[in-house]
Each structure stands twice: as structure tokens, then as C-alpha cells.
Image (cartoon, rainbow, N blue to C red):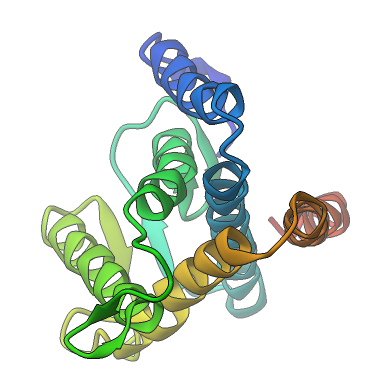
Length: 197
């Protein structure tokens, strides 16, 4: 992990794509989407940190792990490519949000879209697991029992994303995202310094 000798140049254009996506939202002053994207990205970091702590605590396996080639392995379940993907995922999900009053099948759209987006993400994870690039070693976190992957792995991401999107002021969005990223940064600092990540 964190071995820079595996660096590949494709990381640079990927980074520029992420920067461009966020810069476009800044240019448009579309703070709802910008902060929603950061909220989802921050929630992924939170999950990746506790996943690494599970591996440290058990000494057996993380809840999920990434295998195969990567330009940079950040944590046991997070590589640079996945990090960039989650940075974009929240922006994409927020851009597709209809107005709050829009109903889907007669239901409020936010819960429906949280459930649907989470299910789609789990479907992608199942395919990645079958391809051998995403490992699952615990019986309760597996393709044959995807409910916890859905409930813990993705539902909180989209809840945070949509909640931040719908907050009434830019200040409240900044505070919410700041809290999420602040907790992540503190956890990385503390657990990283202890050698647990």
C-alpha cells in the first residue's frame, strides 16, 4: 500500500477530469451539486477508514479489499481510481436529482433515488467482485447477501449527498461537508499515526 513505484500517468488526466467537473460547478455557482459531490466523497472516505480498521482489528480481512493493478493503493479497500470515481459519483447523482416535490411512483423522490442509486452501486460491486478485483471475505458481506452492502455501503452515501444538496444555505452546506471531511481527516491522522491504516 501507498507504494508510488506503481504510479501510472493516466492518474493525471483522471485528476484533471475531477478538477474540471468541480470547477464547472464553481463556475456555475451550483453549490448544491458541488457540496453534494463532496459529501458523498467524504462518506466514502469514512467507510474506507473503518474498513481498514476492521482489517487491523481482526488481522483476518477487511470487509472489502481491492486487488489487481492500480496506480496507487491508498487504503486496503481504496485505490486512487476508486477515489476519483467516488469524487465524481456524488456530482452525477446530485445533477440527476429532480425537484423535491417530484414524486416517483407516488413516493417522495429522495428515498426512492437513495434506494435505486444504492442498488445500482451494489450491482456494480457484484460485477467487480465476480471479476476478481474487489474481494469480500466475510459471510455477511457477500453477493449472496447484498443487503448490508446496500444498507451500510451505499445508502449513507446517497443520504448525505442528497441531504447536503437540499440544505437551505451555502453556509449550512459548508458546515456539513466540513464536518464530514473533518472527521475523515482526524481519523486518518489519528489511526494513520498509530499505524492502523
